Length: 254
Ligand code: SAH
Image 1 (cartoon, helix red, strand yellow):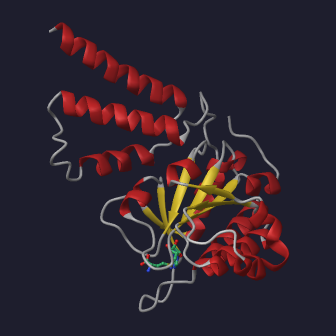
Image 2 (tube, rainbow, N blue to C red):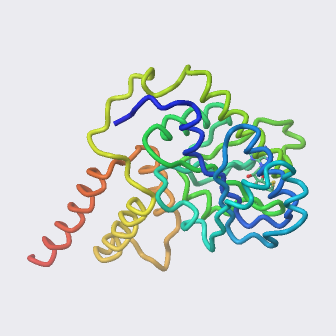
Image 3 (cartoon, rainbow, N blue to C red):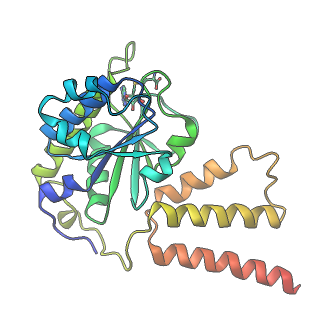
């Protein structure tokens, strides 16, 4: 069920995930960027240095966001319990979720935030997000920039996205109740539930001989992209997994 949430409650459902940040100063800047816009849930995946005095200095009045930050070993851990994640990346990927610009990406993110926990995933300062990390997400969001110089500082990128989130949350223009969304028949599936389905699907495709694990090529990324476009509900995941189980049992009988 979509419900009409207060803007501050929508913002409180957004996690800012920094994957492998190398500079503690940027972690502090991200915390400050978040707090100025009313966000508070910072997740750090394998930070090179954290906690660190440099992060505290750059956070200034937002040290509380740093103190409450969750440090994780993997991106999957940081996305645990979320129903939707947007990869924030300047680079267009050949494979991966459909690309969009920040304003549009934030509108979709807030629509999802009405149903559950969501995440904005930012990459490392030097190498950005890996293709695998981007494929974990359901949207690929870029900040429109000068094409000749498109890479923002990590803290600045966090600021832009948090600003857009605040504007959108308070504008009331695309809040779910006004968007004519059909009420869901069941709750949105969590990332773990969708990943469980992908694992089951891959295993079935291997057992049936449709998929050769030695030559995976583009099959799984393409299927992830397909299912990532439809916002899967838990009932739908269960139906799909039921079909896969029935196929396995059926092939055993013949
Ligand atoms: N050299 C890296 C850029 C890293 S900048 C690369 O090629 O990907 C650190 C992070 O800031 C990026 O991973 C991304 O999350 C964010 N970022 C910087 N500029 C951005 C832009 N124009 N659009 C979206 N995200 C951007």
